[in-house]
Length: 454
Image (cartoon, rainbow, N blue to C red; front, side, top):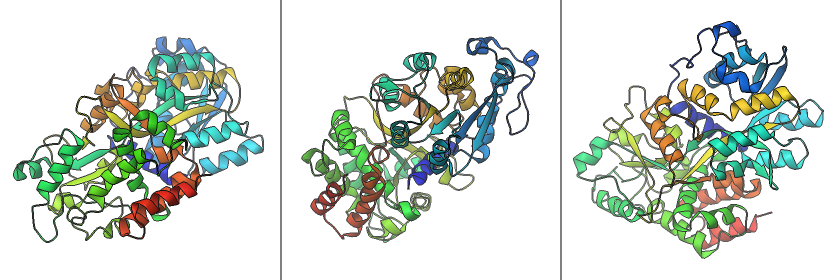
């Protein structure tokens, strides 16, 4: 259910902050949701001269983004439209991921589309619908993005799609006041986290457990478990093995991948460690990911593993800050001397129709100008190196941007989103459910997932 994976990401973006600041330098922009911008005389067009001028041309930007996010996306084009003369028609629909196939096959493809998974991008390119990006777009990506981010938009050594927005996964949510009251500190390594968990488990309250966990997500139930495993594969086996794993070169039953499952097992399958406020290990599957961390507020658990989007799940009035009601730390490193290793998600802008106006819009979306304008509106982050973290609208957003921009940070895209659908959004998800309820043991789980690889 790829739309749910994108749905996770959309919520995570909306969670990082709220809209509030106007675009820097936008003195006269405005218009309706169709995107009409202000008069060029009201705008400083210096930043937009590089894109050229056009006489009333229109470019459709197709996306699954909706609601407030869609309005904010439209707003980022006001000055661009006023200065270039290009009308950017941002079309947002939940069905974009499926309808793009119908539209492309019928010869009605949009000029550009925001694509939320590399897997979908690859398929659309293989089908002959997505075409290579211009040299100017590639130059922007070379300047403002890391090699790994460029790689996700490169197919068969051809650069086709520019990164846009990003999310950081692997956060462990906790209550600073709870940690202080219990006399414990944020762990620096994975072993420290296991030791902390054992210490917290000494609390023999009937409903308390160190961790609260929820895998429930309708037809997509199980994906939170895959995030746990992906974090541990990256930390225990390293980025090269992670890359080989998501392409099938390294099997799930490989000892390096099995080690990651065994580390996750130490927490998720231990009835003394989970599932605070909900019941035993078996309650993980019936607990929704939305509710998963809420027992922290009731004192029934101390930690919850979930991506940055979870900021939106806390009840209204909950202060998310280092000295607030709730805060988060990254899943710790295995090697304390290594740089940060994070998993996450992202979106990519691909071109379906070749035109100078489409090139200009795609180039703008890959620039630091657009990244700073969009993040300043709230609700999103980006891995664009030209982005000023101060523009993020929350403490967590600023922390996530600094991690993404870190020189030593190793970033890898969500593994299940990169794997073939038969595995990543099917057997991997369902297998995690069977594992935590005890239907299969670790060996049976790994053999089962391997058997489903196309």
